[in-house]
Length: 394
Image 1 (spheres, rainbow, N blue to C red):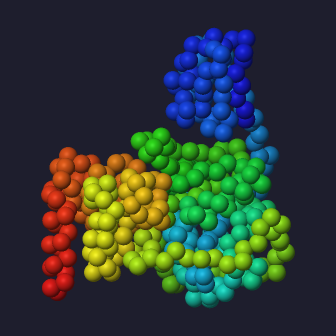
Image 2: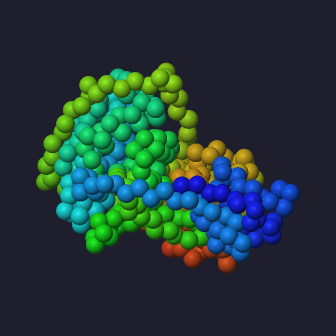
């Protein structure tokens, strides 16, 4: 697929510039010029042009035999001897999708020191087959090495759907796989469903800054690949389930460009927000970076973690690893306390799956109150210390 400006037809009217949501077109000497690093081939400029001066060429290549692809493969994530919770979430969701299609669920686990207990939990979540690759070469995540392994396994298994987490590792790995397989990829999905009539995966994700939800399909290529945000799918364990484990640890692959010598974890006094049951999150409304110490104190008393809005992170008040939202982490704690956060849709996308949401804000019309289970209109600098006093007394 490609896009082209036909110079003889372009009159430099600028309609295409106004229509581009990605700022990918500019006028140079009254001629439209496209920045291919920004263009996503959405076609808005083609529709806007009244002179037929912009052309998108679509290369339609259908897979010759779609019937050779069957089943769902979850590419699991294994880190420091533990399988990431998003793997169980995706296997549980894959089980539901597979039942709708009448196919099986497999899970590929790559790492070192993979425990039998964790593998059993993957089966309990819904996998009928686990492909295990457990060796020292795979101890540290290496996108070059892992992508070669995943591509090889997909070529051997021929799944019609491939799912993996929209984590830092998943986002680095799966685009390489999609390119190698010459198939489509829908990133950061928040919902998955099956169009039974066409046997298509319906992949829903936020688009245009979270202002709309787009449902995307991949009708002509296999496998259909999606990355899914953690904490948006429910884990369903059934200890009566059984499955087989296939050991392919001897699979031969090497990484030529990069070798991982060690990994260094960022130290946090309040834990990882992705795994926390309680999160105390701060936005620009807390006033200054020093006030995150107040939220940290509250989080420690609650055995929780500290989160933040993008505004607070962009201001340099707290590291990016604490950011919740569309461009940060998706969380689903039992309790989410939003302090001085207005609640723009981009932030809501990352935390609206929380079981119970408490919002504290001076502005009674802040969007965060629309999704809060409990809203407190007032000064957080007066309210949070009162919370702390009560907790310290108890």
